[in-house]
Image (tube, rainbow, N blue to C red; front, side, top):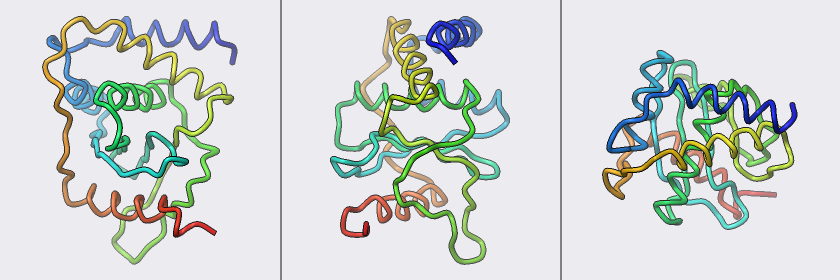
Length: 172
């Protein structure tokens, strides 16, 4: 898909998206999750320098956006907006190679899809990046600099597994 087509799709989605005033990225995620019938959980994650800045993981009933805990709040918002772009543009797969495995003991959450921000050569990445830039450009009043920091129990388990997978000492 060419840049012009992505731009048109992003602008159409943004035109129909009601942005909260004052703007809170977590409130927007809550609204989008409710509209899609799938909650969106935001979780800060410690990412190695060579790792992805953000991750979008989808389970059977929840979408998780993991963002770099060690970067600025403005960059964290951009990461979250980028991952929202993947969701709203309908991207369903990733070429990410982060070493995360969805398997585990019975009762653990099974992974449905994953996107990782590592390369921007793919058309899906361009579209998500365009979406994030346009979304944040439209925001005039921010409510605060605070982002959610405490994950719920299921998010905490996923977060622990992700951080372990992303750790350089666990890579071949």
